[in-house]
Image (cartoon, rainbow, N blue to C red; front, top):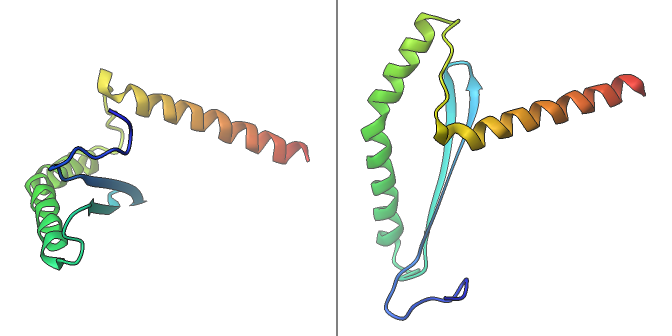
Length: 108
């Protein structure tokens, strides 16, 4: 099927979630949930919002408990698993780019 082509009788959703650290122990969570049907019906967007909040709240207790473990030992090191490979690569690449940028600033 071609990208962007909708199958008749189906509904499409787009969900984007972004997190950015605020402090060592707090993070801002931004999200958006889009749909391509009943655009003029605010209840659809409200229902999607409630679903996303419900899902987040199911995880909230676990997230807060994990933060308590991290706060209890500032030297605690997280262990990576295979699913972390893209994030590990991003961090490695970002560190290299940052080093290069700092080196260029110092040379100037």
